[in-house]
Image (cartoon, rainbow, N blue to C red; front, side, top):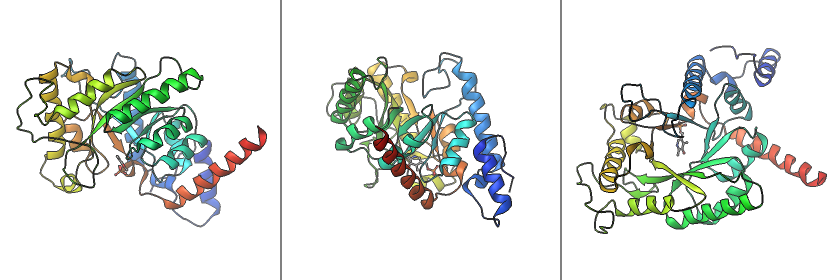
Length: 324
Ligand SMILES: *Cc1c(COP(=O)(O)O)cnc(C)c1O
């Protein structure tokens, strides 16, 4: 295992602690050399590409197929310590994902406001207002499945702009979640099989892509959100199948092709958020534009960290309340 780097205060504190206390592996230790290198290389590429015109979530211009494709990295913060997250942010990582609203609110409260948060958990309509109000640096939601949700998000964004919490030009970046594996436990709109023929018209209600195309159009018509693409969580079996081909990712990719054929939308405006620790390399080979990675970079999940962060957030809120 590598010694933690001491170029951040968090890392220095961890190193000092490790010298005094008996050897116990911290989450920071688990951010091993290859994870750090991966994160650094990724951050550098992101900074390089950020100079160009590439839109969020799509870092490889589709017109320049010869350039290597590099998806955006969403670093998944769930069950990680504040120190690990701070260090990743200090290394240049800006976009973080979280799939549990109370944890997202706590982390957003305690971590730098220069982080851009993306919600990737199941979206309940009655939690949207709370989420947007509690996390002023929320940049996106990847799990939208209905027009009602998109409308609520846009309406609340409008209110937050009116009260000065959000900048006038802000649009929350939305992905539509697709259930590519067909598992009951996964949320999302249905995806047809890869060999489905594209619909001849967007208004063909009998075509399996109809609901997805309609939701995309509805999102595009709203004032305070932006349509970013399609998101999926592949089945675990597909992640671990060593076939060199993930049929869930193939289904998401084929869905985008059909939608573009039918609607005339350019592929470049429909990102594909797919790939987690177990399957991100395969996802990249199959056209991912956004990988969501937690444990491959941070190591396993730490339930103690969740509790500690909750206590710290509670303390912080008390102080805020008593000083106002
Ligand atoms: C937890 C989670 C991830 C990251 O999972 P890892 O296996 O830790 O990389 C990605 N996407 C979603 C929706 C998640 O809930």
